[in-house]
Amino acid sequence: MPAQLLDGVALSKKIRTEITARAAIVTAKGRRPGLAVIVVGDNPASAVYVRNKVKACEEVGFHSVLERYEAEMNEEALLARIATLNADPAIHGILVQLPLPAHIASERVLEAIAPQKDVDGFHVANAGALMVGAPEFKPCTPYGCMKLLESIEYPLRGARAVIVGASNIVGKPMAMLLLQAGATVTICNSKTRDLAHHTKDADVLVVATGKPKMITGDMVKSGSVVIDVGINRLPDGKLCGDVDFDTAKYIASWITPVPGGVGPMTITMLLMNTLEAAEKKIKY
Image (cartoon, rainbow, N blue to C red):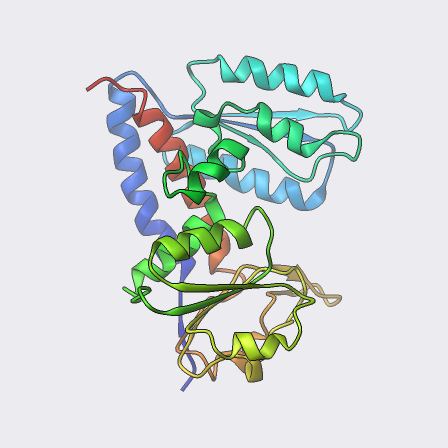
């Protein structure tokens, strides 16, 4: 039998209903949650993500600010704008859409965002806090993956979890969250020797490499949970993940579809982080 789907669309709707209700309470207390999104340059993929984020803010009752700048914008001007938003009491979350133009240092820009407004969870202070289990905000994509596992009440304590991809955005924070949940974690990458040896040992397999259909069904453990973070556009225009869904779905017990799995959850957890940032500012 094919695996059951970890439906990110359905779970996202459920969580956004909660966010909407909590946002209304915060707004009634005079602190409407506010998210500022900064886009530098004209990256087509970024444009889609940003449009979805702004739309999601409106749907849950947030105040949103979208600022677009030409690719020629210099780094100092961007840093100055972030400093202004850091001081703006109407803004609780600041998101700078990546990638940035090559002449702007992403690390410097991300570290300019006040940690208490870093709703992406990328600031080095938040990354360090995550390491010791006390983050201000959890990075949105790993946070969404954990919510998907929580939705099926998967017993992570003692489970073997394998992550393919070691980025600061997904792989490393995903490992920290799984470790904190009691899993035994292995981090691999696209160059790991005998990768299948590790992936076939995984009760929970999280793949985030950016390589289309890299993980095939014969690399998946029978009965495992497969979370595919990747989203790639094939030459024929169709979208696919980093896992070969058509073969893996007959081996796994649960699997995320692409699209409709992790993607909706990433935006939803961004909203949750922004809401929580606003809630922290309220004096009950």
